[in-house]
Length: 164
Image (cartoon, rainbow, N blue to C red; front, side):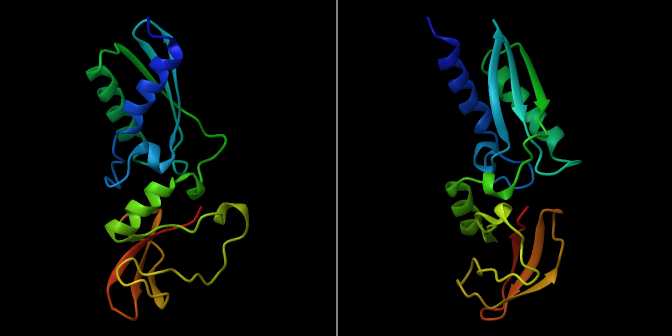
């Protein structure tokens, strides 16, 4: 017989493997928004999900995608609960998630930024050539959590996942 703990770990793996709808290069586990999975009874599961920021429009798509993934694996009733505390921060992005962001051409947020103040002037490494000589083009990019920057060395524009 499979214990609830083993089943919860398996279901967490399934839910965590769902790609982020705005950054499909990352899974929800790598992004750090999946907080927990609990078996409530036979065929009943509760998933805890923390949005990257209050009002994040992707949270509904994340919830729907998790529900679909778990339904496909025989879970009849999936409840996704939004957990707002503790709040998500960019420090919740895994090392693998940071690596994937950079590989995808998005400068990852600095690790540990949530522990202290974010400097007004921020030096961001270009994900294309590695230069630290970059400039801010726009505080917002394709999503509110990213800024648009350009490398002055290679002249390539790139997104920077802002520290929160």
